[in-house]
Image 1 (cartoon, rainbow, N blue to C red):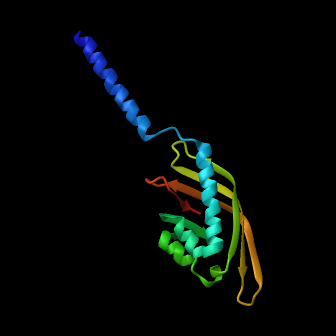
Image 2 (image 1 turned 180 degrees about the horizontal axis):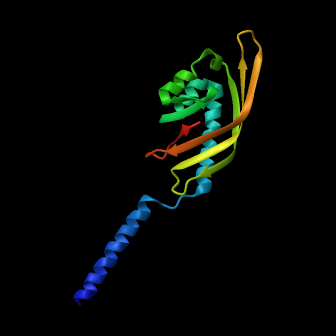
Image 3 (image 1 turned 120 degrees about the vertical axis):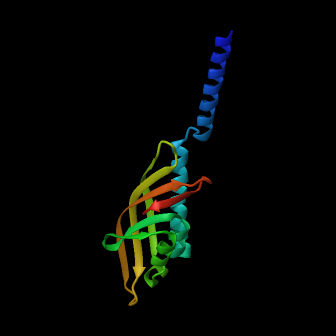
Length: 152
């Protein structure tokens, strides 16, 4: 009888730990997260064109985000990124991008995207300049379930 009680106790403990594990890491639907990330990318693009690059790059950045810009220079942190995009050339810049690919981590806390982008600037002399290329962004989900980029 004593062995039976001990065995039941072990099963209860094991069941408890498994239930806690699943409660903390529910099965993630990668397709639903891809939809969230696509929506986040789209809204980021809309906000940039509506409110400016400085506003949008700051709004969607994680506190510890890093961006790689001209001549492979790295800009660290949300406020430094906002400062970088406050340059006059970005005040009237227009950009378009859309992910061609989105991947989500197994635990649903990270995602990355890549695709084509195009920036349009107006120089001081009125000349229009267009840059295009491929972007790569890494997104991280915070404790509240919100997504912010950590690398761009």
